[in-house]
Image (cartoon, rainbow, N blue to C red; front, side, top):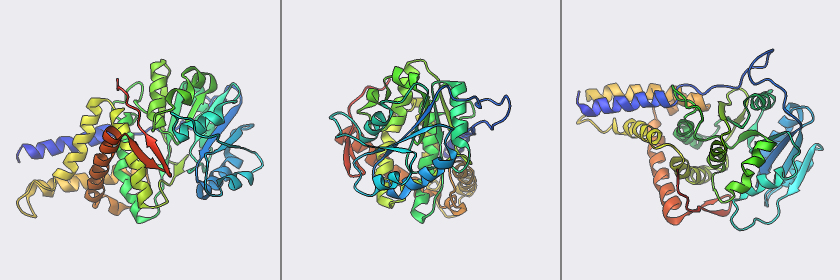
Length: 369
């Protein structure tokens, strides 16, 4: 065995370290952490742009699964489909059309800002329109935030349906790794949160400036987490398996590529350098272990490739319902990840813009601390 073998083995170990365990929301029960009642009324804000296929499913879930007395605000972000009509079918929904997008604002942050503008003192919940809530996960998340304070987020379990959706597997894994929340030795404060499910106190949200403070940031979750950390407020990250799930980019492969291109480089520049190095080492060695041979049965490849296949089978299932065949075929998705990362770096740092949902999203230059 040469040094390349041990380098790849080290990368394999980094994979386990970075995604060891993503904790789940505490189970309800007397005295269980995170089951306290929300301090004051709950306001649920759903920014929705061209979400007619997903919104009705979420609202049907909220019809039975929202906390008692919770108010639901759907902000129609200039949709070109029947999003508003879907929202009107639910009597408990407060539907608001988003005003014209001001200069210097990104669409989602503007919609969240509009929806939260008149929320009373209490708890704020932000939900993406493609999230599903099969059980009591939202009540548990609100209770957990009441005990924790600050900002709480949940990464929904990724339910995949069509073959191309399995290409998202390594992207989901790296997204979790980048926050540090699933590390074998997790940090006190994760470096990021997950935008699909965010729960916070109204006072804390307004104290950090809310979405107005990150108006120009194209990826709101990492930027919002940074504001809470700077204010000395806690952030918490949980896995959503069993409580929340979603289907990412059901519109097709193009939407998948656009979405990950928009998010990837920004998430990378918001990740601590040492964690970025470890994650990059893991990804690179997962591919390069296949090139360190001079014949198809070279011993290094015969050992390393099965190790990585087993690892992918485990890690992928920690973040979504990926088919077992996704693991032995992981080099395809990991190679695509490299292409998307290159495109994301070019668009983020050179062109400073990406396309998403029919809009051009501009990246304002920012010095990363």
